[in-house]
Structure formats: C-alpha cells, structure tokens
Length: 503
Figure 1 (cartoon, one colour):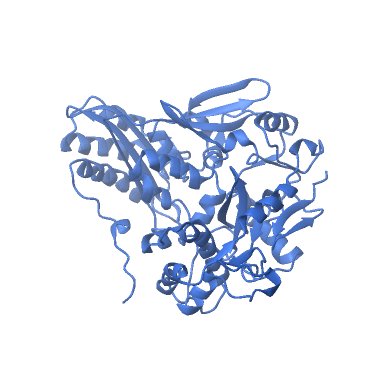
Figure 2: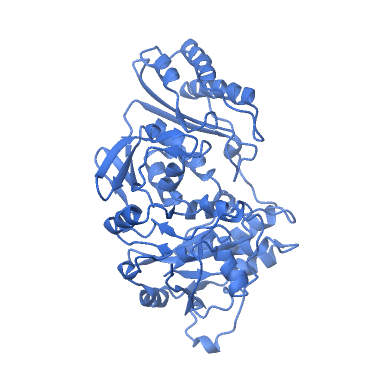
C-alpha cells in the first residue's frame, strides 16, 4: 500500500513528507524525521502534556486553534492543517507584533507573550514540561486574548489541566497565563495562513484504492471505504488507538480516518434533540451539551485534559466502549441514541446502552460505522447530576462515574435514567435502580432504598483505582448525595474552591 505525501503548513511554508507510515505519530515525525526536539516525549499517552503542539484548521472561513498531544496523534491526521511547535513562536514570520507594519525581514524577533510571561513569572525550572505549557498558553492566547477575552484563574486552571509540572508548581504558570494579556501583543496573520491552507487542500477521492491512510471527506465515501476495507483500523481522535501504538506497540498497515467526513463533524440543533456527529471533538460536543445543561460544566472539564478533548471525539469514545469512559454514563442518563450506518443497509438507530455486548465489544457489523449521537432535549421536570470519583481531580480516569437523571413532578419520580461507569464490563444502565425509583414518592426513604438497590445491582472488580467494595459504597453514597442536592443542600467539592492569585 502507498500513502499520499503528508502536507502541512509550518512557519508560513508548506512541509511535504513522503512515505510516512499510516501509524506513525506526529511526535515521531517532529522529533525523528524533522529533528525538532523542542517538543518533548514524556508519558507517551496524552497525560503529561510535554508533547503539546497547536494545530490551526479552517472552519467556516475562520482559523480554529487547538492544543493537542502529538505523542498519540497520528501524523497523517494533520494533513492540510497549520502546525506550531515551541520552536516556531519566535520564528514564524506569520506571527507578527500587533500594529507593526514593517516588512517581516525588518521586524525584531522577540519572544511570544506565552514565552515572555513564563520568563517573567519564573514558570520554568527543569524546562522539560515547559514547551508543552508554552504551547497550551499559545492556544489560550489565540482563543481568548486575541479576541479580547480575559483569562481568569479558573479558565487558566481548566485549560492547563492537561499539562503536568513537577518543578515550579502551578502558581507561577497560572500567573503567566494571566499576565500574557498585559504584554505587547502578537497576532497570527490569519488571512495569509488561510490562503496558504487552501493550497494544501486535496480531493480525498483522488486517493488510491489501496491507500494506507484513507480519510474520505464525505459520509458516502466513508461508508464505501468501510465496506471496501473492513480490516482497516478505524480512527477518530486517536486518544485511545494512539495508546495501542505507543504502549502496546501495535502496528497498522491501513487506517480509516473518520474525522474528515463533513457530515460527521456537525452539531445539528433540532426541536426535540441535539444531533452530534461522531467526529465532533469532545470539546465541541461538551460545549453543545453544557449549553443545554449548564450544570455539566465541571464534569465536562474533568474529562481528561484539554489537549485530549481537542483531539478525542464523542463518537470515538462511545464506539470504543471502555467501561471507564465518562461520556457514556452521561449519555445513557440523557437517554441518548446512537445512529449506525453502512453503505449496503443504510442507517439504524438504537439506545446507546444497547450498543455494547461485552468488554469493548458491540453490535456493529464489519461494514458499519457510528455516525452520530441523538440526545433528547431536557424536560421541565428533569433533575440531572453527574458525578466523577477519581484519585486526582483533574486529568484522571474515573474509579466510579454515576449520572442520575430523574423527572420529578408533584413529589413523585415520574421517570428515572441512571448511567454508571467503572462498575461493570461495559458502560451500564442501572435498570433495577430506575425501577425502584419510578412511581415512588421522592423522599429520603425512597432514596435510601434505591441506594441499596444500586449497590446490589453491580459487582465491580477491584483494581489499581479502587476496590470493588469501595465502588459499591460510593454508588450508594452518590445517590444519597443526589437526594440532598435536590433538596437544596449545596454541593461541596474541589471545583467550588476559589483560586486566588498569590499576593
């Protein structure tokens, strides 16, 4: 099999690389093929953020910036995009001082505000993690400062949660995030970047039939490729498949990338439901959900770190079917349905919890793909709460994830939908607990009885994250917490703490 040359924009110039294997990571290309060792390799699994780079992509005529982990991102997935690494911020001729009209050749090269703020705030010691922090700060600068939006302490904490530091600690780095806006401004010449990106576009239909990396741009072409290449490894954001490459050392001779199909990248608002395409990033999918359910904000920001959410997709998380994936309990509680499609049989729709048949196993046929998720809009009586229990508050995998959604009217539970993660071989719906609640008066006694049913409904295993007994205890405690919160008891957790800058 052959692969098309990998093309992306860097420092205002196109980069073209031939013979890049379909399973080669972007970090490997940067460090080993291009010799750009400023981007560091730390954990190799998207946790530490040392490998963070920023991608620029045209969306609806605008340049959209995303900080991503290059260690688990497949190199071919950035084809046709702009790429910035830590070496580029002071060298890219298209990053220019605000208001400076002098020719690029005559401009004095200075540090970008993301770099200068780290220097002034003493945010770096060993320097290994610094490139990743700087690139996350650059993404924040482009997405907030350049639009006149302030960077609060809370925003900085959220958007840097995917970067880990073990030297200075986070206080001076959070200071740097807030100080960027007070430094002399720098701006990407977006008009020129967009113009140059147009020159890199290519027609996916021109790909060879036996291409090693297939990335169709339309849903019909994607389904045709799925039917023609059932053995190809399907990828979206690669936040899990990337681990199979870096940690399990798996190799893939052919990859089918679903993220270029335009139909799968859309969020469609309908009168009765929100339709989220399978290739919509977790960042954008959670934005659509929190716009409807604002109480989900903290839960959404605790799904990994921002670089993972910027790459990973909602459809990928659902199709992957990990029993500790946080989006599935939420979607189960929201009564979501998944839409599967094949070229030969068209579309079919089923409740999300019915997608799974066993550990990382599902009902999809070899020629089928998950194409979108349908989430009904909330009812007037709905009371939704989502809980994540993990060893760390940020950037950690759940020991238990529980999402409760009860319709309560006239003091009675009219309907109950409960999704649970980390307690079974698949994301699960707590049907027995739902039955114990439905039609019952919403009282403390009902909540306690339901908590006992919930604890008995699952037999979670013991592992490095928690014991089975602890998980069962947490399930019951969370249902009682839900009862207290529905009675007006204020929620107390780490996300309610106010982060104050040092004086």
